[in-house]
Length: 358
Image (cartoon, rainbow, N blue to C red):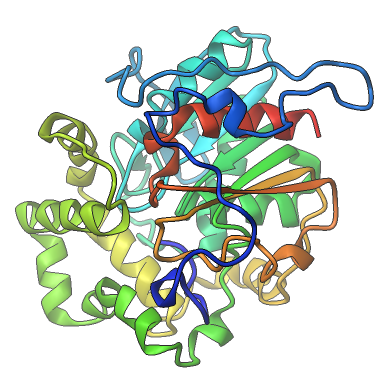
């Protein structure tokens, strides 16, 4: 999941900016985005995303595949072939279905939407058995750059949460010419491995129980057993999205992505690497050295803070505001947990549209 914080909502919610209320299945989602649907200074009106009930859609059209970098990437695509491109990036323990409602909303507004499975997930596969199943933060970002190159996408709006936010943040920081705008749930999530070595408040450490679990042989054994890791992932869903009443079918559609043969290796590597238990591949060292400096993000950005997500800092975004040097907005969303795009698809899609018009 997202980067560890020195302060978390685990020790108290409600500080900072006023939260946006999403009670009633977003019936007033257009209004809940405040003035984001108003005319911009250029005079061009920003489209308003129509409100829908989360779970309206259950699947994507036939998945596509493309060879990109070290991977054969499985992805969903929706929208007109010549529309402005949006790439939606999922997190852990989730998959492309986090955007199953978001993608058609954006496609209906004329966007060409791509939703790829990250390495180790779903139908994405490594091209060679010899490629190490690593998952440094820069490796995942380079996967998406390779995807953009393979699909001949020079520039896109990037939008994500969890691993997806981190990946989008990295691309925006290191390759800003490839990013038209950014939606980053949870704020600035580029991992600072040096800070990861410092103890956090006890309530924060408690939230990271699975990270410490993955550091043990016992956790590794559980992750390498398909049934046990699926049960673990479902339990995580209930903890980090306490107000989301998903059903068995909803979880089951995503859980299929956890059966990827490289899933355990990729997930374990990512979390063990973050806390310094293992070193990364030398091929990524130069990128990780740049990321260690916590580079600023200059592209137009909207950061989203789901108020019930236990991993985000206080809702006003001040702890990471200094990392964003370009056009910027921050929004706090009441009653929403970690899987924001699936829990509140209308609001997430509106943030994408608004970021594109910053």
